[in-house]
Image (cartoon, rainbow, N blue to C red; front, top):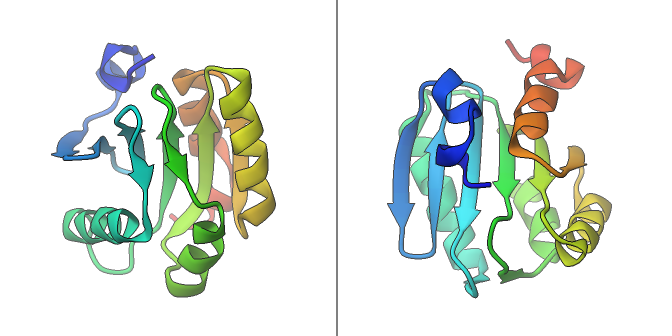
Length: 140
């Protein structure tokens, strides 16, 4: 389910940013990404995402990152390692899957992540888990 079609979008104020390869929703404590069908999420695109995140949030921010996998796309799971070596603003992340393939990809992501990573089958569950995570609550 697309974020904007969910009840969660009515419950949280957000700013929407559309890039050529995906759409991003910036909420107070989390970002939701929805990548376009068939794209390859390269390191250059990840850096572009990081730049818009830095533009949106104030200094020394901490957020959760929710990947709402409504479309199929490819990425290199090793980028998780590279990301966590360079950046420290993500407290936890959630991978929302809608197919067995996306579940398997989320399982692979979990192996590479240095932070809490949950697999979820709904955007509502993902946001609820994020907002109730002890690790995340300690940040605020």
